[in-house]
Image (cartoon, rainbow, N blue to C red):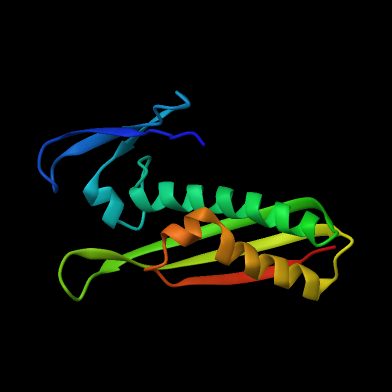
Amino acid sequence: MPTRTARTDWTGSLEEGAGKVELTSSKLATFDVSFPKRAAEDANGTTSPEELLAAAHSACYAMQLSALIAEAGGTPQALDVQADVSLGADPAGGFRLTGITLKVRGEVDGLDADGFAKAAADAKAGCPVSKALTGVEITLDAALEG
């Protein structure tokens, strides 16, 4: 299996510095990062490790859920997956991820609500990004639409 790479160039202190995150393997984009904007409610044109992690988690989860729906005899027509990754104070000092919420709405042929709920829960447990984040509480809100 392949290894994917990203890199960050950072200049300056934590509070006054800034950086650029490059998606090196895909060569798709470079994004600005800044700690003050990371900790602010409005990201104002910058990304953060949490947003990048949310993107990775939502994509990984969608792929895993699609596979499990098919294994259960269903056909996914559309999956809308949102991952919310929260940053907060760590009681031991500094910061930590305080939780992740996965929200999925699916249009699926061949599975009822219970079958979809089981596939969704199994995808949460089986997605490689979920496995990597076992130290963070991950909650799931899954429902069929249509």
